[in-house]
Amino acid sequence: MIAAWERLSGIQKTTVQATGVVLFMFGMGWAAVPLYDLFCRVTGYGGTTNTAEAATGVVLDQTMRVRFDASVVRGFDWEFRPVERVTEIKIGEVGLAFYEAHNPTDQPIAGSASYNVSPYEAGLYFTKIDCFCFEFQILQPGETVLMPVTYFVDPDILKDREARDIHTITLSYTFHPTEIPDDYVAPETPVTN
Figure 1: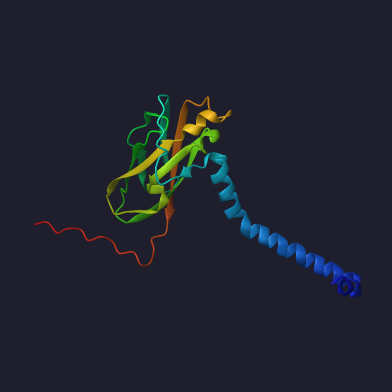
Figure 2: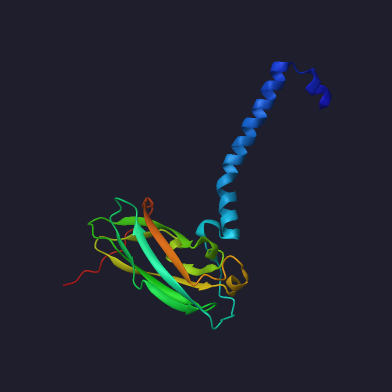
């Protein structure tokens, strides 16, 4: 391999090096999104939450205030709000919150929710068991739905020097428009006489 490298002319070496740099940069660009997502999920960076099948089973006497926030991107025709804006739960206790979405138009509209938790240090400890945000949603014309999120605050938050003094966590969702899949079949509306 070294002998082959030495036989190359200066311009050939430059071409090989430039090609290597381009391939490396392409690979890093391709891997950046999944690696950043993994980094955020592991560290809670940027308010990214964790997911779990169930709570830890440890419920403390100390409570956490949880605020719920909702918005839609500009031009998205849904109305979207938390049913309850603030709740207080014990750390480790499973909480259930509902958001309400309404499609005031005469067309079905699909949306997907992005979310974050603030302060960011709490993201690692705010854990979702189930959430409407795991899938996109389709609302029929005039339809209003309640969308649940089941969550808990991991007791390990009290062991984290940067997070243990947090007393209020805000869970924020923003709905964005999503294309309705080509194979989507709208539910039939019952005929009333």
